[in-house]
Length: 272
Picture: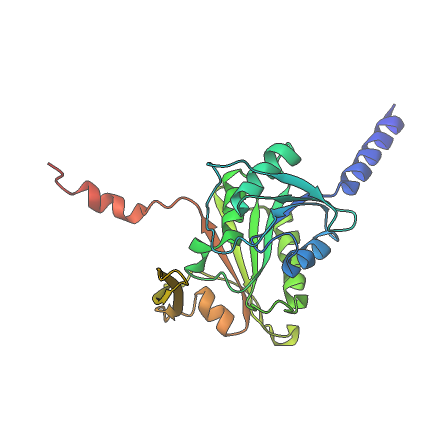
């Protein structure tokens, strides 16, 4: 009997080792984006990948969800050996549908990206890439958003893939605290110039917008928004500092937007 039990325990250990983690991948640049393709390639070396991504670019959508029109979800043959779906909705919609209608359960981890362009500092608010990761965290899934600081369509994702693999493998092992996710940005540098990974805070920065006023062929005004990114933060513990100084920035993000430090002050106010 002892021999049989020992054999069963050994077989169970082998089975557990053979089970790969389920990795849900999404983005905001769309199902055909090079960043998504590169993320799928590297995640396939870690686990079983399922892709649910927008059928068209959704940059700057933030955490928008679709409530006034139907959502379409179509299976597509984009990545060899990977179940992939394109969704007519937003990045947040993609995560909701993936969990409820594709996987019918929570994956072991959600990774969003790799975004073309930085999502550091205040950009986390506007980013569809990060909002998909936030939606994953709301669902209780360990979630990470990856962005490469390069807007070029032919950007080299070699360094981003290298660090995405390192970070995902580590988070699969140690997990994330409930209610948190990671915002990871990779500088546009060769791997020999990257100094390492720096866990840091979100820099205090903002966009200063201007609007070009133009006229359409029907003599109606329209506006084209432009913006300048202004970093107001001089700290050496921020994501902007890390990226400028050759580090991959990792910022823990929470979706609880409560300003806890202000509660005591407001409770001291006489409201009547």
